[in-house]
Length: 398
Image (cartoon, rainbow, N blue to C red):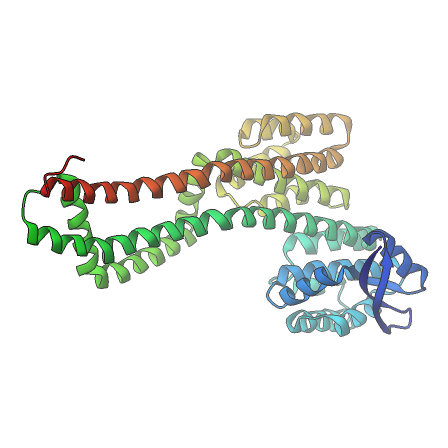
């Protein structure tokens, strides 16, 4: 059996921590409940230590923890103000602790929970606030918080998987680039001196390498700040509305498969969760549009929202937008026709989250050897150019 650490609270509000043996995390959770306390968090010790170390740097991780713990407390029957009071005392991040105290103060002054959350847009997104408002209106806040926790966990896993896949290619490209720069600025100049002493006519490729090496060595003090300025200027341009549109168009054109699957999963997961939580359809559609990161697709969804307001449904306008995969559109159409759109949207999200991970792995599987091959060819060209020049001067066969 594995050993799990847990943090729980009694019905009086006292915090209890300890460890428990269980075959899996679900069984550990049930055993903690059987002990007569309300479990807030149950994790393996190693996983718990890792999350604790990262919580100070991740506001989204704090939000996920806050949602899961609040869902557990309200689901156990504790009032909202008492649940928030408990969470204010156990929050690990100082910023989150201050936010929870502020929300609790607003509620005690007469504000609704959703209005109190709305005062902190940097922590609670509009999507989050709208779902909580729907839960308050329908009297199902505990269910909505549970779905919010699942939504945040799924979104985090998807984002982490994409970032993890990008780490190795980025390191590979940086290492290869640095190796080529060192070769051009420190190794090639030694050959340049040798060629001057020996005289003779050098091949064109060797002359190109020597000129490039001299250019980098003599003007690095201009190239370095110019490169930094260019990166900053490009970054600022991308941050503008026009630059973001241009950048998103390029990504959509050259990485259409990955971008389309990512935004399909994100849109359908958000839309399905909102509808299932009782958010009005048009409001759910608008909020789902807002979570889409690519402006090309978001613009197409804005047109879809306009058609939906005119009573055209959602499947046909999405098909006309031509931004989502055909399979997703077919599944959405079936869900709309059978009256199970929320369930079908969540199925589409699950399908494309898995498909996205496969596409990212496949893309990285092609990108990594492409980077290695490119770096190898560049270095081989430099080395061969030097050897050809040396053998030519020494009149040796190559």
